[in-house]
Amino acid sequence: MDTNKQTLKQWLKYTKNLNLTLEELDKHIGFNTTCSFSNYQKLEGKNSRHKAEILFELWESEKRNINIDTSYLIPMLKKYDIV
Image (cartoon, rainbow, N blue to C red; front, side, top):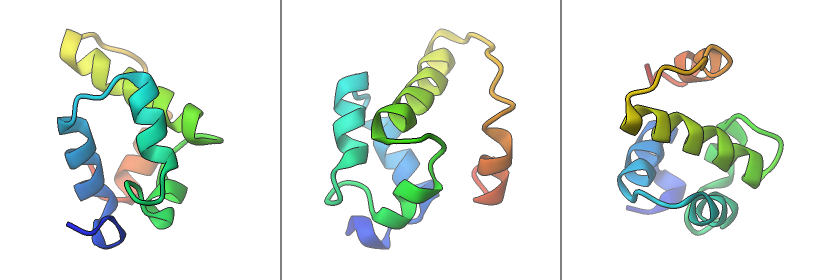
């Protein structure tokens, strides 16, 4: 699917299933061929590295079944109908 036509929800699902390392996720978010600018803007964080760290922390905690404070993500997730 063309990344420019993916909704944020579709992009997040696709990207999560890639099971990327933090460094790979940072690059994946930073390239306009793998993440549309509109989706990039919707992600929480100051830059691609910060955005990658937030997603990586969230996804890794799910894998380990660890409860972390993700309350700062809830407004963005609700806004884009992800939760």
